[in-house]
Length: 315
Image (cartoon, rainbow, N blue to C red; front, side, top):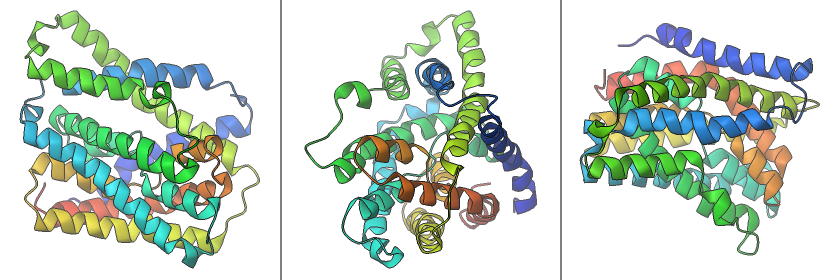
């Protein structure tokens, strides 16, 4: 069994990068608004390069059924978690209005990228698992930009296609199409090496940028214990239990099961804070959900991943 202590050493650098980013913002080394150009580089260059590096020529993604199931599980679990958050919102004191809807969306969308990628790579390794993660995340994005936005904004304030179509999504689609026509081997080696170098920038810089965002939203934050406890219960207990149960009962290929185990352990993603601000939600509620689940996940990620991987025989 992979020990939780070993996993803590794996995720500690990730949380140190988050803290570093928050400190850079707190002490104004990177002032508010100064990280916008770097975020564009991560979304439109570094992350697509990382995705293409791991999707192109990935033998695990040559099976159409695995691709479909990966996307379906990514979208399905987000919809499930969002529904649970909406149903349990009143227990957190959030009844009708933007607070309850924001609680559902922010608790329903996990940190599926910047935190999940280094954990998956460190625990299970190899590019086959990472390639499946990116395809799975396509389903998360689909659910986020449909169910998530509709719940936050209603049908009158939905985003245009320019917001929905982003660099990572396009990279997954391009990679899958290229695989279907076996175009990966035609790519020159120097292009592959350039993608590898660019992709290597995506995760550390992306985590730092998440830390900068946490530094922004944590300023003056006063925790709402009731909202935080229910968010922790939904995101880090109920939803993981359901996801692991599905893996135990269904026939899911091991590479995809490894991805789902890591996703089950993730705290709430940071992007719903931005969504709440942009689509008429309640940003303060999203901040409570994100900060509380992220803090507690430092303890729960190693425990859940090590136990689930051993229980399901994925190591």
